[in-house]
Picture 1 (cartoon, rainbow, N blue to C red):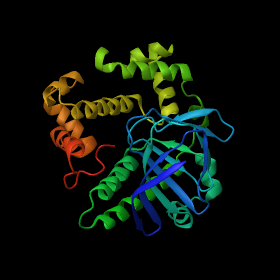
Picture 2 (tube, rainbow, N blue to C red):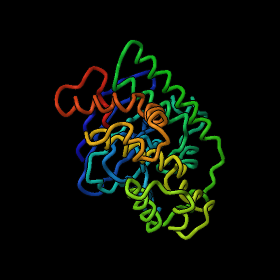
Picture 3 (cartoon, rainbow, N blue to C red):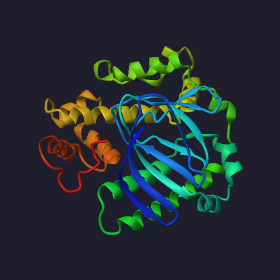
Picture 4 (tube, rainbow, N blue to C red):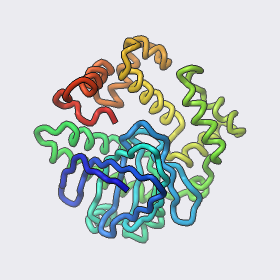
Length: 297
Protein backbone atom coordinates (compact mmCIF):
# COMPACT_ATOMS: atom_id res chain seq x y z
CA UNK A 1 0.00 0.00 0.00
CA UNK A 2 1.22 3.48 -0.87
CA UNK A 3 0.32 6.10 1.75
CA UNK A 4 0.97 9.83 1.75
CA UNK A 5 0.09 12.47 4.35
CA UNK A 6 -0.70 15.82 2.73
CA UNK A 7 -1.16 17.89 5.88
CA UNK A 8 -1.37 17.15 9.59
CA UNK A 9 -2.10 19.03 12.78
CA UNK A 10 -1.59 17.75 16.31
CA UNK A 11 -3.98 18.98 19.00
CA UNK A 12 -4.39 17.76 22.59
CA UNK A 13 -5.44 14.08 22.55
CA UNK A 14 -5.75 13.86 18.74
CA UNK A 15 -3.74 13.77 15.53
CA UNK A 16 -5.66 15.19 12.56
CA UNK A 17 -4.46 14.75 8.99
CA UNK A 18 -5.42 14.55 5.32
CA UNK A 19 -4.09 11.33 3.82
CA UNK A 20 -4.06 9.63 0.44
CA UNK A 21 -3.73 5.87 -0.05
CA UNK A 22 -3.65 3.53 -3.02
CA UNK A 23 -3.32 -0.26 -3.19
CA UNK A 24 -3.39 -2.80 -6.01
CA UNK A 25 -4.63 -5.86 -4.12
CA UNK A 26 -6.65 -6.64 -1.00
CA UNK A 27 -4.97 -5.01 2.01
CA UNK A 28 -5.62 -5.61 5.71
CA UNK A 29 -5.45 -2.61 8.03
CA UNK A 30 -5.56 -2.74 11.83
CA UNK A 31 -6.39 0.32 13.90
CA UNK A 32 -3.46 1.11 16.23
CA UNK A 33 -3.97 -0.18 19.76
CA UNK A 34 -3.52 3.32 21.18
CA UNK A 35 -6.09 5.02 18.92
CA UNK A 36 -9.74 5.41 17.96
CA UNK A 37 -10.25 6.67 14.42
CA UNK A 38 -12.98 8.80 12.82
CA UNK A 39 -12.52 9.17 9.04
CA UNK A 40 -14.25 11.09 6.27
CA UNK A 41 -13.97 10.45 2.52
CA UNK A 42 -12.69 13.41 0.49
CA UNK A 43 -11.94 11.87 -2.91
CA UNK A 44 -14.53 11.83 -5.69
CA UNK A 45 -13.51 9.73 -8.69
CA UNK A 46 -14.10 6.19 -7.46
CA UNK A 47 -16.95 3.96 -6.25
CA UNK A 48 -17.64 2.96 -2.67
CA UNK A 49 -14.89 1.16 -0.76
CA UNK A 50 -15.58 -2.57 -0.38
CA UNK A 51 -14.55 -3.99 3.01
CA UNK A 52 -14.35 -7.43 4.52
CA UNK A 53 -15.09 -6.87 8.19
CA UNK A 54 -14.27 -9.78 10.45
CA UNK A 55 -16.19 -12.86 9.35
CA UNK A 56 -19.10 -10.85 7.90
CA UNK A 57 -19.92 -10.47 4.22
CA UNK A 58 -18.33 -7.72 2.13
CA UNK A 59 -19.82 -4.31 2.86
CA UNK A 60 -19.63 -1.11 0.86
CA UNK A 61 -18.63 1.99 2.83
CA UNK A 62 -17.69 5.58 2.00
CA UNK A 63 -20.29 5.64 -0.81
CA UNK A 64 -19.98 9.41 -1.34
CA UNK A 65 -17.76 12.39 -0.66
CA UNK A 66 -17.94 13.36 3.07
CA UNK A 67 -19.23 9.91 4.12
CA UNK A 68 -17.97 8.90 7.58
CA UNK A 69 -16.51 5.80 9.19
CA UNK A 70 -15.40 4.88 12.72
CA UNK A 71 -12.91 2.26 13.88
CA UNK A 72 -12.39 1.32 17.53
CA UNK A 73 -8.96 0.53 18.89
CA UNK A 74 -7.57 -2.65 17.28
CA UNK A 75 -10.39 -2.82 14.73
CA UNK A 76 -9.43 -4.91 11.70
CA UNK A 77 -10.61 -4.54 8.08
CA UNK A 78 -9.59 -5.90 4.68
CA UNK A 79 -9.93 -3.37 1.87
CA UNK A 80 -10.56 -4.33 -1.75
CA UNK A 81 -8.73 -2.26 -4.44
CA UNK A 82 -10.46 0.91 -5.63
CA UNK A 83 -8.50 1.63 -8.79
CA UNK A 84 -8.13 5.27 -7.71
CA UNK A 85 -6.45 6.84 -4.65
CA UNK A 86 -8.62 7.09 -1.53
CA UNK A 87 -8.26 10.54 0.03
CA UNK A 88 -9.52 10.92 3.58
CA UNK A 89 -9.64 13.26 6.54
CA UNK A 90 -8.57 11.37 9.65
CA UNK A 91 -9.00 12.12 13.34
CA UNK A 92 -6.85 9.74 15.38
CA UNK A 93 -7.91 10.11 18.99
CA UNK A 94 -5.78 8.98 21.92
CA UNK A 95 -7.43 5.82 23.28
CA UNK A 96 -7.45 6.77 26.96
CA UNK A 97 -8.73 10.28 26.25
CA UNK A 98 -11.43 8.95 23.88
CA UNK A 99 -12.69 6.42 26.41
CA UNK A 100 -12.63 8.98 29.23
CA UNK A 101 -14.52 11.56 27.15
CA UNK A 102 -17.16 9.13 25.87
CA UNK A 103 -17.49 7.08 29.05
CA UNK A 104 -17.30 3.83 27.03
CA UNK A 105 -14.36 1.43 27.22
CA UNK A 106 -12.83 -0.66 24.44
CA UNK A 107 -15.10 -3.74 24.87
CA UNK A 108 -18.08 -1.39 24.91
CA UNK A 109 -17.08 0.21 21.62
CA UNK A 110 -16.40 -3.15 20.00
CA UNK A 111 -19.89 -4.26 21.08
CA UNK A 112 -21.45 -1.11 19.64
CA UNK A 113 -19.40 -0.59 16.49
CA UNK A 114 -17.79 -3.92 15.62
CA UNK A 115 -14.57 -3.69 13.63
CA UNK A 116 -15.78 -0.77 11.48
CA UNK A 117 -18.93 1.33 11.66
CA UNK A 118 -20.28 3.46 8.77
CA UNK A 119 -21.68 6.56 10.46
CA UNK A 120 -24.53 8.79 9.31
CA UNK A 121 -24.56 11.84 11.57
CA UNK A 122 -25.02 15.40 10.33
CA UNK A 123 -23.27 17.00 13.32
CA UNK A 124 -20.23 14.74 12.97
CA UNK A 125 -20.06 15.43 9.25
CA UNK A 126 -20.24 19.18 9.86
CA UNK A 127 -17.41 19.06 12.43
CA UNK A 128 -15.22 16.97 10.15
CA UNK A 129 -15.83 19.32 7.25
CA UNK A 130 -14.91 22.25 9.50
CA UNK A 131 -11.64 20.54 10.36
CA UNK A 132 -10.97 19.91 6.67
CA UNK A 133 -11.54 23.58 5.90
CA UNK A 134 -9.16 24.70 8.65
CA UNK A 135 -6.44 22.31 7.49
CA UNK A 136 -6.89 23.09 3.79
CA UNK A 137 -7.16 26.86 4.35
CA UNK A 138 -5.27 27.59 7.60
CA UNK A 139 -5.67 31.01 9.13
CA UNK A 140 -5.69 32.77 12.47
CA UNK A 141 -6.83 30.41 15.21
CA UNK A 142 -7.01 27.33 12.98
CA UNK A 143 -5.49 25.00 15.59
CA UNK A 144 -7.95 26.24 18.21
CA UNK A 145 -10.84 25.68 15.79
CA UNK A 146 -9.60 22.15 15.04
CA UNK A 147 -9.28 21.41 18.76
CA UNK A 148 -12.81 22.70 19.42
CA UNK A 149 -14.24 20.65 16.52
CA UNK A 150 -12.39 17.56 17.79
CA UNK A 151 -13.98 18.02 21.20
CA UNK A 152 -17.43 18.24 19.60
CA UNK A 153 -16.70 15.02 17.70
CA UNK A 154 -16.03 13.31 21.03
CA UNK A 155 -19.38 14.57 22.35
CA UNK A 156 -21.22 13.26 19.27
CA UNK A 157 -19.45 9.90 19.51
CA UNK A 158 -20.49 9.65 23.17
CA UNK A 159 -24.11 10.27 22.16
CA UNK A 160 -23.85 7.80 19.31
CA UNK A 161 -22.44 5.17 21.65
CA UNK A 162 -25.43 5.53 23.94
CA UNK A 163 -28.02 4.89 21.24
CA UNK A 164 -29.41 1.33 21.07
CA UNK A 165 -27.85 -0.69 18.29
CA UNK A 166 -30.44 -2.36 16.07
CA UNK A 167 -28.43 -5.32 14.79
CA UNK A 168 -31.28 -6.61 12.63
CA UNK A 169 -31.59 -3.30 10.78
CA UNK A 170 -27.83 -3.06 10.27
CA UNK A 171 -27.72 -6.56 8.78
CA UNK A 172 -30.72 -6.12 6.50
CA UNK A 173 -29.06 -4.10 3.75
CA UNK A 174 -29.52 -4.21 -0.01
CA UNK A 175 -28.18 -7.21 -1.92
CA UNK A 176 -25.28 -6.48 -4.31
CA UNK A 177 -27.54 -6.75 -7.38
CA UNK A 178 -29.98 -4.26 -5.84
CA UNK A 179 -27.22 -1.80 -4.98
CA UNK A 180 -25.83 -2.13 -8.50
CA UNK A 181 -29.21 -1.29 -10.06
CA UNK A 182 -29.58 1.75 -7.78
CA UNK A 183 -26.10 3.07 -8.60
CA UNK A 184 -26.54 2.51 -12.32
CA UNK A 185 -29.83 4.43 -12.30
CA UNK A 186 -28.39 7.33 -10.31
CA UNK A 187 -25.30 7.40 -12.57
CA UNK A 188 -27.62 7.88 -15.56
CA UNK A 189 -29.36 10.86 -13.98
CA UNK A 190 -27.83 13.51 -16.25
CA UNK A 191 -29.53 11.82 -19.21
CA UNK A 192 -32.69 10.49 -17.53
CA UNK A 193 -33.27 12.93 -14.66
CA UNK A 194 -32.76 12.21 -10.97
CA UNK A 195 -34.95 9.31 -9.80
CA UNK A 196 -37.67 9.35 -7.18
CA UNK A 197 -37.36 6.94 -4.27
CA UNK A 198 -40.38 4.96 -5.49
CA UNK A 199 -38.61 4.29 -8.82
CA UNK A 200 -35.49 3.01 -7.03
CA UNK A 201 -37.61 0.83 -4.76
CA UNK A 202 -39.27 -0.66 -7.86
CA UNK A 203 -35.86 -1.49 -9.35
CA UNK A 204 -35.10 -3.43 -6.17
CA UNK A 205 -38.50 -5.14 -5.98
CA UNK A 206 -39.37 -3.81 -2.50
CA UNK A 207 -41.70 -1.20 -1.01
CA UNK A 208 -40.64 2.44 -0.66
CA UNK A 209 -40.32 2.31 3.13
CA UNK A 210 -38.47 -1.03 3.05
CA UNK A 211 -36.07 0.32 0.41
CA UNK A 212 -35.29 3.40 2.50
CA UNK A 213 -34.43 1.25 5.53
CA UNK A 214 -32.34 -1.18 3.48
CA UNK A 215 -30.46 1.60 1.69
CA UNK A 216 -29.52 3.30 4.95
CA UNK A 217 -28.46 -0.04 6.44
CA UNK A 218 -26.16 -0.63 3.44
CA UNK A 219 -24.65 2.83 3.12
CA UNK A 220 -25.07 4.47 6.52
CA UNK A 221 -27.02 7.40 5.08
CA UNK A 222 -30.53 8.23 3.81
CA UNK A 223 -31.13 7.76 0.10
CA UNK A 224 -32.15 11.43 -0.27
CA UNK A 225 -28.76 12.50 1.08
CA UNK A 226 -26.96 10.08 -1.23
CA UNK A 227 -28.74 11.45 -4.30
CA UNK A 228 -28.09 15.04 -3.22
CA UNK A 229 -24.39 14.28 -2.80
CA UNK A 230 -24.23 12.60 -6.22
CA UNK A 231 -25.94 15.61 -7.79
CA UNK A 232 -23.39 18.00 -6.27
CA UNK A 233 -20.56 15.71 -7.32
CA UNK A 234 -21.90 15.94 -10.89
CA UNK A 235 -22.00 19.72 -10.45
CA UNK A 236 -18.28 19.74 -9.67
CA UNK A 237 -17.52 17.74 -12.80
CA UNK A 238 -19.59 20.06 -14.98
CA UNK A 239 -18.05 23.17 -13.42
CA UNK A 240 -14.57 21.90 -14.23
CA UNK A 241 -15.61 21.88 -17.87
CA UNK A 242 -16.22 25.04 -19.86
CA UNK A 243 -19.22 23.98 -21.92
CA UNK A 244 -22.06 25.26 -19.69
CA UNK A 245 -22.86 28.35 -17.67
CA UNK A 246 -23.85 28.09 -14.00
CA UNK A 247 -27.47 28.68 -15.01
CA UNK A 248 -27.31 25.87 -17.57
CA UNK A 249 -25.73 23.49 -15.05
CA UNK A 250 -28.50 24.27 -12.57
CA UNK A 251 -31.07 23.30 -15.22
CA UNK A 252 -29.20 20.12 -16.22
CA UNK A 253 -29.12 19.00 -12.58
CA UNK A 254 -32.81 19.69 -12.04
CA UNK A 255 -32.54 22.68 -9.70
CA UNK A 256 -35.48 25.06 -9.82
CA UNK A 257 -33.19 28.07 -10.37
CA UNK A 258 -29.55 29.13 -10.52
CA UNK A 259 -29.99 30.69 -7.08
CA UNK A 260 -31.23 27.41 -5.59
CA UNK A 261 -28.24 25.62 -7.12
CA UNK A 262 -25.78 28.23 -5.82
CA UNK A 263 -27.17 28.01 -2.29
CA UNK A 264 -27.03 24.19 -2.27
CA UNK A 265 -23.50 24.17 -3.67
CA UNK A 266 -22.29 26.78 -1.15
CA UNK A 267 -23.70 24.76 1.75
CA UNK A 268 -21.79 21.71 0.52
CA UNK A 269 -18.46 23.24 -0.58
CA UNK A 270 -18.33 26.53 1.40
CA UNK A 271 -17.77 28.40 -1.87
CA UNK A 272 -20.01 29.39 -4.79
CA UNK A 273 -20.09 27.51 -8.12
CA UNK A 274 -18.36 30.44 -9.83
CA UNK A 275 -15.57 30.45 -7.25
CA UNK A 276 -15.16 26.69 -7.60
CA UNK A 277 -14.87 27.07 -11.39
CA UNK A 278 -12.18 29.78 -11.02
CA UNK A 279 -10.19 27.63 -8.57
CA UNK A 280 -10.47 24.62 -10.87
CA UNK A 281 -9.15 26.64 -13.81
CA UNK A 282 -6.25 27.88 -11.69
CA UNK A 283 -5.49 24.29 -10.75
CA UNK A 284 -5.30 23.31 -14.43
CA UNK A 285 -3.44 26.32 -15.80
CA UNK A 286 -1.37 27.70 -12.96
CA UNK A 287 -0.68 27.79 -9.21
CA UNK A 288 -3.50 27.54 -6.72
CA UNK A 289 -4.90 30.89 -5.64
CA UNK A 290 -4.46 31.44 -1.94
CA UNK A 291 -7.06 29.44 0.00
CA UNK A 292 -8.03 27.14 -2.86
CA UNK A 293 -6.02 24.09 -1.76
CA UNK A 294 -7.96 20.92 -1.13
CA UNK A 295 -11.17 22.01 -2.85
CA UNK A 296 -10.96 19.62 -5.77
CA UNK A 297 -11.53 16.48 -3.69
